[in-house]
Amino acid sequence: MDHRTAVKTKAADAVPRGLRQVLRDTPRQLTLLTTGLGVLCLLLGLVYACALLRDSESIGGLQTRTTEVSATSDLYYELNDMDAQAANALLVGYHPADPTLVPASVNAQSSTTAYQHDRSAADADLARIATNPALTTKAEKLLDDLGSYESLIAQALYMDQGAQNQNPASPPTAALSAYTDASRLLHTTLLPESLQITDTDSAAVDTSYAGEHSTAALLGYLILGLALLTAAGLYLGNRYHARRFRRRVSYLVPGIAVVLALGAFGLTTQLNEASHLHLAKQEAYDSVNALIRAKAVSDDANADESRWLLEGRDPALQASFFQKAEAVASAPGTYYSALSDAISSERLDAAANTVDNVKIGGYLGTELHNITFAGEARAASETAVAFNAYIQDDAVIRADVAKGDLAGAVALDIGTAPGQSNHDFNLYNVALGTVIQINESAFAAGISAGHADADNAAWAAGIISELLLLALITRTGYLRLREYR
Image 1: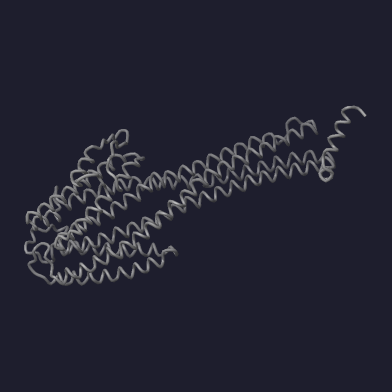
Image 2 (image 1 turned 180 degrees about the vertical axis):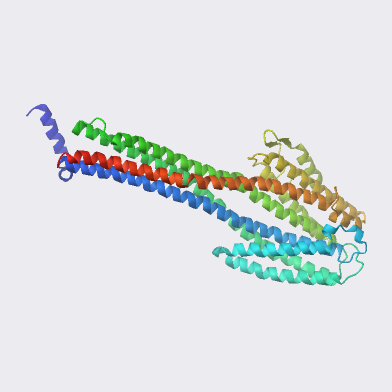
């Protein structure tokens, strides 16, 4: 026995007998090799398909959940604005002693119309929230409490309509009592219930995003790993054919190129999906969520300002106003001057789309620290400036009351001329709406891009690659097995 034969015999003896039975001849080896490569190929295709399905679910789920959170945030705003509009109606009266002091846009009838609009919007938001089985019970309770609130407000407005020659902030005692009861119900029950729903939904969005973002990236690397494993199998398979059949290049070689391309495409798609999720949720939706809350809480503070004038200048309502104002834009120090100084110190670079030296906190501070999209820096900066103008109006209103000019304070509060409270608050709302729209558009673009990356083209690339790989693997095995027939 020569040396080469001895080595082969020794190698054969080293293989377990059971395995030798399985690999007893070349046709069996070819069959197993072809089957193994096919299984690797199918596994790669399965993971690729599961990743695309999950992408569609993640993007669609984020869109659905954020729509629901927007509905709950809108509900909080509508409830606050209902209270503010009712307070404004009672503040000026249906039959004021001097109608010339009351702008048409904020007279009692206009405020009542706005109240009814808010009421319809709140009902629609509750209907949207109730479609979530997890929130149905809370929505139903909220609807019952809202009915009680609306009943008290209806009584207050009805009684106020019968009063003649009213002075500012002087509704009938019974009307004021009914409104006070309604507002207490709103602030102790309705708003906390609404805020709880919003917080629950927002937490669900944060949790789901964290999981979906990391999973998208993980699936991308898993696809690449399986592609490299399959490519290695194809390479070893080609070497087997080269040694056994003297075929240096088989159909498995182009298969290597196909599987590597599919792996790279799969990784790119998943990383893009993770990027779209990040843009839509972290960069766009987080700003939208903060700004919508700013809108709701601002309106709540504005209602507190009117209620303070209406309800005998209650110190608790003044404290509530400042608490909510600071939730929107906090600044250390004496609030009026501290906020003004902080806003003045900001440095807007519209060309670079940046705002530097941001010192305010709260919801507007969150937005100013999350500038991403074209035009967002200018819009966010203008919003902060507009909010400060409204806050400075509040300082004048309270100063007027302190010197005994209640009528002047009410006139400034409801005034729609430049430099008056309602005018400046409306400018702030317009600026706030602009920056919200910028982020909502970016969110929609991120969602659209996410859907596009998991669309028919991605599926077609996966299916074509899989079919081509299977054809190349099968063809390679068939040609060699045919030699044994």
